[in-house]
Length: 95
Image 1 (cartoon, rainbow, N blue to C red):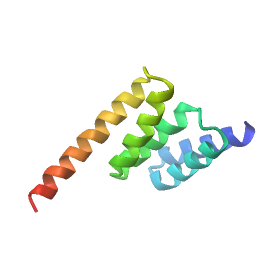
Image 2: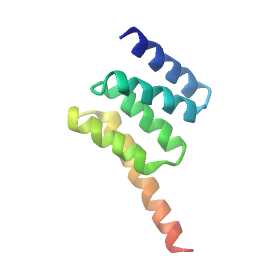
Image 3: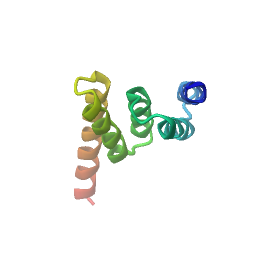
């Protein structure tokens, strides 16, 4: 659990400095140690949203909602992911 906390904190620090790719890597490492910790999934979803990786963000939020069906952050970030996917679909249709 000590390593998990350290990795999560490092991820949080990367988010604060806008280094979302690095933060996502730290959260992914956390998941190898604990797949049930919802916060790292919603945090990684935030990183994916910032990186325009909407499908990945949606997947992380879906995972959280299977464990915790009333997680507000997961609902909110999944809605943002859906919105991003819709915008992308509209833009692709215009090409």
